[in-house]
Amino acid sequence: MLQSSRLSLQAVLETANSEISGGESRQIGEETLAVVGVLAENVGLRKALADSSESAERKQQLLRTLFSTRITDAVLRISDKAVSRRWARTQDLVTSLEVAGVTAIAAAAQAAGQLGQVEEEIFRFARLLESNHELSRALDSQATDESKRTLVSDLLSGKAQPDTITLVEQASLHPRGLRVAKALDQYSDILAARQQRSVADVTVARPLSESQTERLQAALSASYGRELVLNVQVDPEVIGGVRVQVGDEMMNSTVADRLADVQRKLAG
Figure 1 (tube, rainbow, N blue to C red):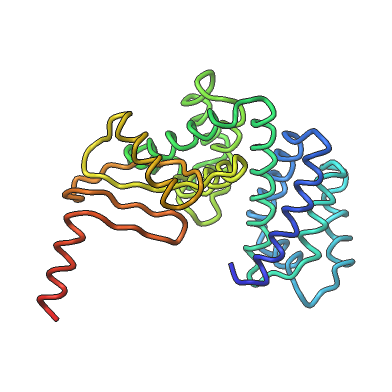
Figure 2: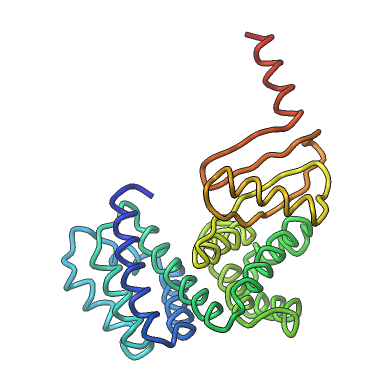
């Protein structure tokens, strides 16, 4: 996001967190994500609500005309804040509401003592999609919402927390141009942030043991100065060492990377 959108996102999250603190965070999250679903499917509407040439009052009136009987006052206030702000891109408005909705779901899971479990389930489902191409194609396809809901229910009902199922359904039905696995990874970042942690994407050549994972997590957390949650992926092409990405920052320490660096220097 550009600076203007980042500032607007911060304002929306401040409003969302204020509303969440008043209770009913799960309802706030589900209703906010429902608004995201409507905007994701209606180009004209999201353009109208993000139009910087239109007054905030006019956009808020349009929002209330469409949603006031369908969402609670808390969600209406969050949405009001979003449409009153300036956005560098139309999609940034929708993204801000999605982040607010997932944050509210995270707050509900946290209050129930289930946030860590939901985070783990979201991560594992995203990895399942990356390893199971048939399943990934099914959820990334243009299949009907009902067929995707049925598939998610068949896979997760009774096996995952309800908040996990809510988020997987949201990513599957409204990925907004992303692969479902990527959308879920973004949700994981929001869930981790709720626990004041960051997510480190770690790529290794072979699976790590539990003790190796714990040592790596401790070392990386100390290196970055904050607690990190590891999303570990195996890539046989990583000959040795480890590749770590935290946000936009990449740390490489693999044999493959060092060989490539030597080759570049020889070529130069």
